[in-house]
Image (cartoon, helix red, strand yellow):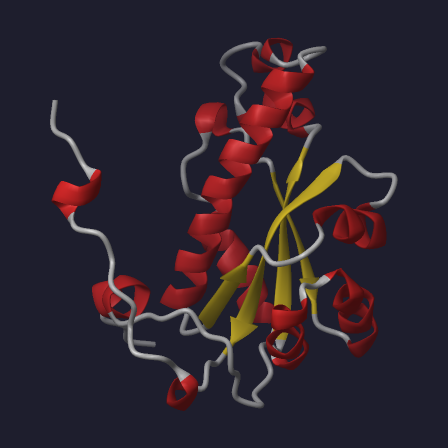
Length: 192
């Protein structure tokens, strides 16, 4: 596959809400993760957890958790990834960060665990979307859902907490709105 990286991942890539009726193979989902996992996280903590919602049964389980405006696009997306984070990520630090006792930085420190897991899981979610775009998929990230309901439906009695949802597939470009503007460098940046 040949890609023009900047166009395909940033400049021409768009957030999709309409999808072609074309499946996404499990092998591509594995490739996305294998790329995304290489992005940096603090102390290589890697707290992401992803639930790929593909089956009709899983989609129906997700449906009541969605805000009304997100139901149709999510039901029609070939895949919806629940991007979550693992609140017990630090248990893997002896393997992931072996040159220090990083696990001890977190044990018994609930706020530090939550902040670190959420921040780094969010970073990994961004890497996930860039990897999906690099592999030719379109993304439709969203936060219009009930986190508690998703966690109860998919992660009950686990250490996983949902962060955001990301629909994946091959977008229908004919249904895109014109690209919305972005803020300029001078509007959001300072060089101090």
